[in-house]
Length: 486
Image (cartoon, rainbow, N blue to C red; front, top):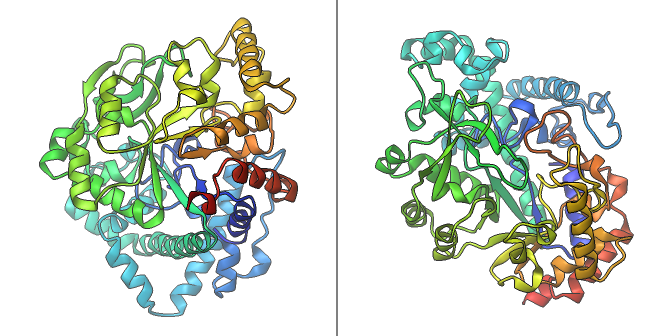
């Protein structure tokens, strides 16, 4: 959130870009996935700027340089996180020695609904060797009040450390958001519909989820077979008890949205379909094939959130097994849906809806998402192997894309960016890998797999003036600048 993030905002401003969309910013859990965070409220401690800590006198500048450089645009999370944690610990000790901090007290009061329990969760997790909370000592796992009181006393310093990190995160985030706003750049966040089982949220609020007496899920979330996987996606997240949430006025969700609105100007809500119906998978099923649809809260949920927070600036990720009822729910509350250009040229019977000439204005078009291959990788894909397509399907999509875009494919990423910008969709978002024209080696995530997902990072030298000029020219050509929108 420091020098690098501000430099990226400056790049966006030079490129006449008005939005920066991010993946979820919570502390990642299993597999480093931002969609499987340890908290739906907390910030990722590894986004804290160490340089800014040094400028505030809380870190020694000589200790900041990480000893583990990136290799081919990828990071190795474990050693990087260990290094950053050492710096954060040292900063915490300096901060403690400085005495009372009124801003910290105000922060703790503002975030009291989740902060204390999250900090205790992290401290307990560390005390138990990092294992998931269902493997902790039974009394703290099941939240015995006396055991929790003992833990707060014994782990007080660790709890204070976690609260300090979140305090620093919040302060730096507020500065970054203000910096972006001053340059005409808004921030778009991302809310995963479901939360991780191994999270402070499920441990703190077990009654809001379908769990057994020991805290294990009685059924898990996912999606049926789709474009990304022939066996569907078995996410493994616990399912909400929506009826119970409704009786409590959706208080947990409203607080979650309130925290997000303090950080972002707009929010993409992942798997919007799940608010109308969700895929329930028995815990003993290794894939998502044998799941079944269950009814979600529907319009009642958004009526409650609107009453509490006002009209929400949400983007509805309405991909997958959407139905007319899903679109009706989206449109009732005025949320823009999502269009993916890569989906426009395949054999799916609804592929035509992703062609730009069929868009409505209240939509957000992407060349691809974090779950897609990069545009260059998608275009060059020969099918088979890891691919979701056969060789014939890949060839057919390439041919259709070239005919539709009027191109020979030599700069397919720019052809797709131009098509997105030229569309009538109110918002066009392009993954950075597509702006840079990177191939499959820079793919962010391959759903249903492990390995190097979520580890791609951009080198600062890649964001050249030439790329900024090209983006700016397209933004001006198609009326996507702030001045044109006025």
